[in-house]
Length: 197
Length: 116
Image 1 (cartoon, rainbow over the protein chains, first blue to last red):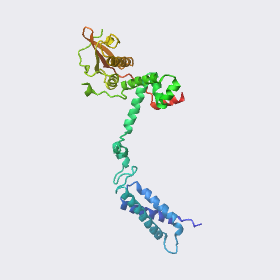
Image 2 (tube, one colour):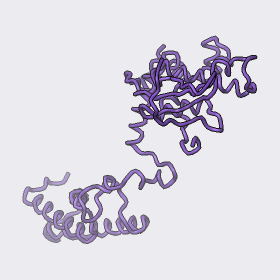
Image 3 (cartoon, rainbow over the protein chains, first blue to last red):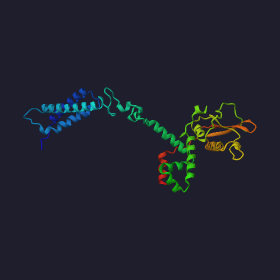
Image 4 (cartoon, rainbow over the protein chains, first blue to last red):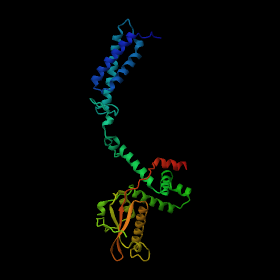
């Protein structure tokens, strides 16, 4: 059991960790939001290594300075390695870009996302509008067509045929009618005015 | 008898309209947009034996007329006709303001279906 750390020693450790964190933060040109994380990482590491402190060999300030310098070097090496792997830039969406305040994720449009690069240009706003339009269209459908929509959304054709007792051909006729009902409400087929001209 | 004002409308095309195309037009039409979906005598042209149209054409026209009637019953279009000559009419669909109904979210529809 190690003796408890005195308040003055703790204040020294906090001050040293703060100084080291600011130095490292400046050297790595990190976003402002990362300063607190750095300070906490350094302080935790320092406290974990306190059992190795020997008061006969020097002051606690000197001990903290050495520990913090080594840990800062390790963090810097890790950070540089990570930057190199990411092509030299910080890619976290939650972190602001250097000199900025807004997180990177807030500055990117939906079309800048990885999904968009791969052709899946889904937009949250468009999705919300589509859901709203679909809810309006479903609300306007006849009750029979709405029931068919729900059945098609949860069951396979064979299941609907077996549960409802209607023939497969009758079911397909209803689906064809549903297709028209949805098209009338703006879903499915598109009207090409240039072809009509 | 409804007297049509002399306003422009999209005339019947050389390539006949299908029921799906007609419904798609309704889906995108603004109120008061007009579409001529047939020219002739619809009652005769869609009736087997007396129609002069080839059978596939007659079936297509029948499906189109059914779709038009369905849209009319859903309050999506007005259906009117303009006399062009003896036994010959231009059949017009005039888009109406889309009726407001209570929205039904798809998720709730599916939940209700699974619960039933």
